Image (cartoon, rainbow, N blue to C red; front, side, top):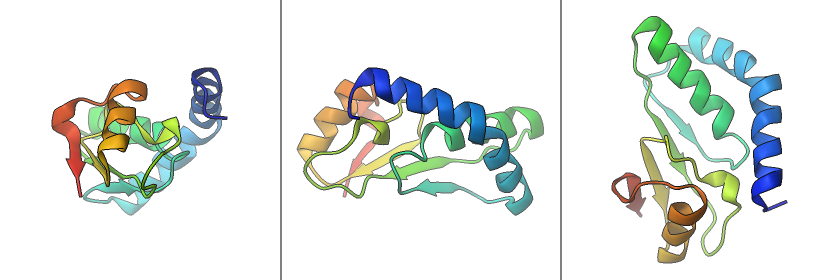
Length: 109
């Protein structure tokens, strides 16, 4: 399941079926920021936060904490996150290659 075509399909599915529900929950909770710790909960929540920011003029930062240590599923990595927290140089390479995550958004922890 760690291929770009399956990643695209999963992103489309989660966006189509989950984004609006996620957005409703986020709006109801009204958080100061979102921290994602699951690879399949990246794209749809990120889009939900972006839409809320546009509609309500309230910015909700979206951070990802990749809990994998050595290798990670490509769905962890989205270029539009504000911060991506990772634990190894190997993950930084994967994030730049697969997620096109800019270097300035990657935080080694």
